[in-house]
Image (tube, rainbow, N blue to C red; front, side, top):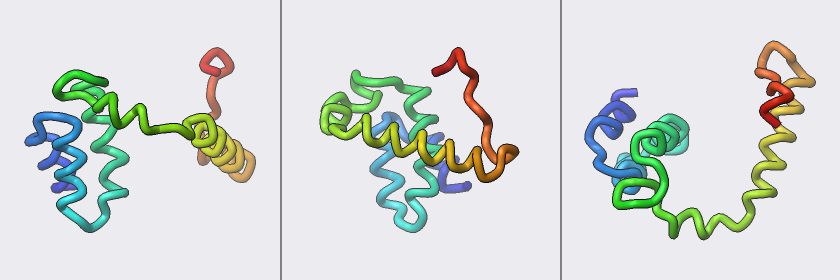
Length: 92
């Protein structure tokens, strides 16, 4: 957690935060689950500080990724209904 807080408090852009996380080595995947959404909330998409549009343009398999996420959530819900939050019908 200290590394996460350091990156969040010092990075001046989404890109800078991602690079700092990579340079720290170690469990960068574990940290990015907090750093990525937090930096997007702070800086948004595009512009000088947000998620670079060129990065988003390279995501070509978003439908497959979303299907995989939905499958994983449904499997988790089926295995243990208390372990997952079931989405509201008006959110789908």
